[in-house]
Length: 238
Image 1: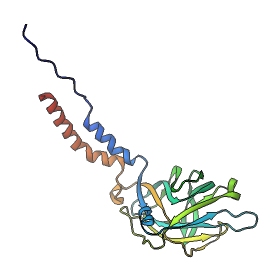
Image 2 (image 1 turned 90 degrees about the vertical axis):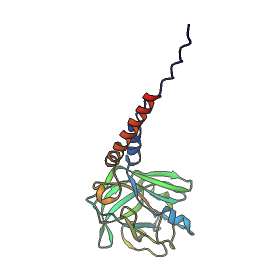
Image 3 (image 1 turned 30 degrees about the vertical axis):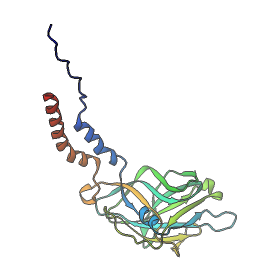
Image 4 (image 1 turned 120 degrees about the horizontal axis):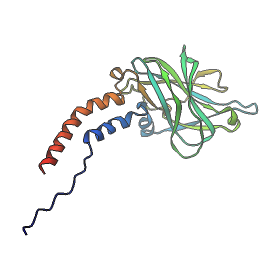
């Protein structure tokens, strides 16, 4: 009886197009980094300061950073990250409108971050993304949780020798304000370019430079389809 050829092992039928489409969506599910100075802050000689809530008649210490959004019809901020050391008790991050160079109306407060003592990035996530206008200025500031204010303390890294520059998405970090009572704010002294990273998506990806998941997938799918077709042809001819 003649020897019959051994049949080839079945090949995996995973769709390359589907794989690339999944990868296309993954980086943009929760937004994209539209502004970050973390590398600039750490590349020089960074310093740090503490913000804290006052208690027992002693004043507190707060800091707010002015940020101008990129052009477009609007943005949705999902999280804010800073560099620093300890976070004692509970803190949240707030976003305020700009009112003639000062804090105006509160537009969003993140979930609280509690007792985070390791050094490095601290991320504050907004349960519901905060909608901001394009080409407008806002103030970003940490705020102590009133329930734990008597022992609240947050360490924040900054670098006064670094120079703010517009991000690829058109966002720009500007001046800073300080407060001792979280009500009255004035120009900050001896503190500049506090570490800040903002994760957001644009409702007008064509004007922001930050593609959304849908547009990215549509850009990749035609090429993915051609690659998948070549893969099937090679499989059939094997």
